[in-house]
Image (tube, protein in one colour):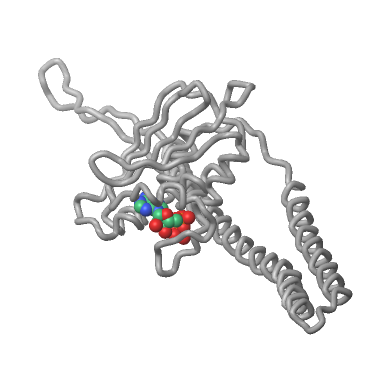
Length: 295
Ligand code: ADP
């Protein structure tokens, strides 16, 4: 039991001390409530922290999954398409041999050519099946706040940026309309652009590694820009960057930017790169606003 005591000395008319008059209040309930509130706050803080950790793990997992899936998919496509191509080449070699025989055997030649046609059709069937498979997943059309999405990714990459001595600044426009699409995919694009920028600046002097992320409202939709102070982009590579398997990194896959571009194009937007002034690279994308308006 907690008791709050307050009292004061009492004097009579002659100024003689008569004792103390006071009250004792049972404040157990108040104390308990305060303790409960304090522990509630701790629990809340812990919950928020776990949620952050969970989201980070989820995003990393999503990223890893995508890379793994792309890797597996690429390997099986390569295998499926390689078989008919190899068979077609063998047939073509046979055709050449039959043609240069003395006398040439056109019966065999036309058989070999028929074989080439068959293998060619097989290869395009494989590609057709893959296209159909990819189209099956309908794209999400949620109303996504791009500023919130950026702030989430910035929070998730804070440690990575700090570990690499990179300062991340944002200037996010107010009153932007929500964009139409898939929040996780848009996070993926922003995450890739930030990680690329961090990697690109590894050779730049410490104290000069900066990422600037800005948003703005354009007639086409919401504009996002990610600028860095890295080595920049030679003009000749500006278009190559987005090709699948283009990489200048020793362990690079070269799929990041090509996946980013297909995600943005699936959102009916566009993604492009330009040199940054005075140095570094800028990646820009525009994604159309959600027709519904409110986010
Ligand atoms: P990866 O990161 O596996 O190489 P990406 O498709 O993400 O694949 O990038 C392709 C290439 O584009 C990189 O290897 C690099 O040469 C170049 N690049 C990407 N981002 C930047 C940047 N911010 N600054 C300079 N070069 C970049």
